[in-house]
Image 1 (cartoon, rainbow, N blue to C red):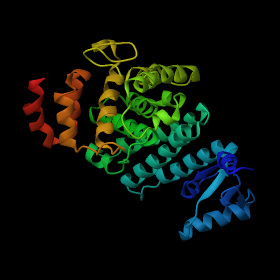
Image 2 (image 1 turned 45 degrees about the horizontal axis):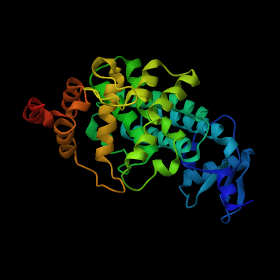
Image 3 (image 1 turned 180 degrees about the horizontal axis):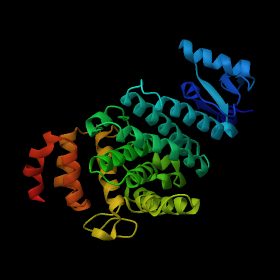
Image 4 (image 1 turned 135 degrees about the vertical axis):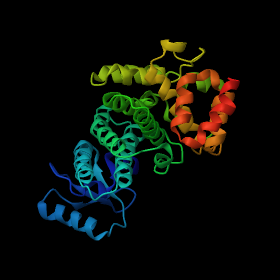
Length: 332
């Protein structure tokens, strides 16, 4: 087996996700060299107990892998483990939120990095439900949430960040619980169409030229089609994937919609998408701080956003932003 084939046949896992899990087990491997993987634990109870002992003792100093075909079992195990953490009243909400975030990143990284079946996205539903629980049981603000989000821009981390920001916004403005959950799904899945675009283009270290930009623009339509074909996501989620690059004053893509022609949830997603993109590091630019980002969004990019939603976003970011609204937004 070649090194490339081996790496595609096995997937790295976070062993901690398996703590207090349950259900069907699977073989766990370690990598002996660039081409070979050796079974570390089988499905036998005594071997699974060995894994749990490692976790309890905190002696995890190497990488572990599973076979590609066991991914669904792994994420099922991971969400069961996560549920046990969520049900424990002694675990702080911040810790719970961070663990949910890490599982979410795993799901999205698997999808984008390994071109996994879109079925893997179904794992996100229970995870986002648990995230909604975290946000609804605490006074979750953007400042607290930003402490757990990744500061480096990758498609999978950006997707989870946007989902988390969308959900936080929905919680802060007291949208119905179901809307908050759908906002989370839509934000997390808004860029799924990028999985159908050349990976070298998606991961380019630098700005896209005009021809490259035209090629990548199709991800919005592709994402909406993909989610619609799965027949398990609501119109809110599909619209967020298909319309998050539309602009409030027109001139966006793929349909050139404007104003209320754009779904309200997609207009929210647009704000969170841009905010996260500007505040995370990329290969060709530094991350902007909050004030630099909001100044750019309200002055140079004002026509892109629903002004009422943008003002509301700035308000719910915290009382220190009140002066910002009075100083900047009247200029738009």
